[in-house]
Image 1: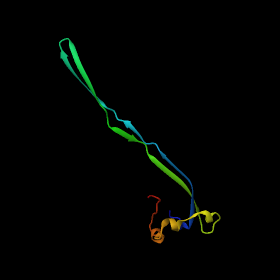
Image 2: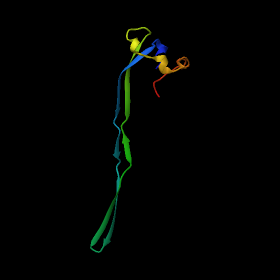
Image 3: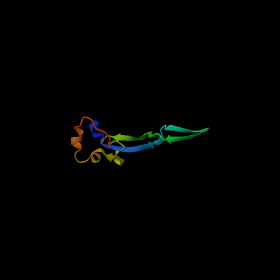
Image 4: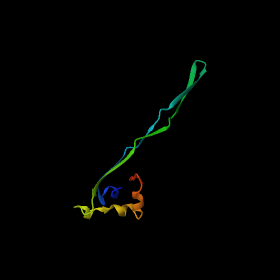
Length: 102
């Protein structure tokens, strides 16, 4: 939340969404058949070995933020960027790149 770095001091998170479409599918398996001839008869046995599980899909998350300059209408209901960044916010502002990753 590099809000103060671009002149913003307060913000409101006004929209958020998440999704998860993770699924586990069975991978293709293999069959092995053995047969034994016993006179006019054939005894056959087929064994199936399931394939490995395959995990597909992803988790997703998004949010929308409205940023405010100090004293701008609506900023009185917004959160403080400095408070969110913590007591070392000035040190964090010296970082070339700030992200919202946890």
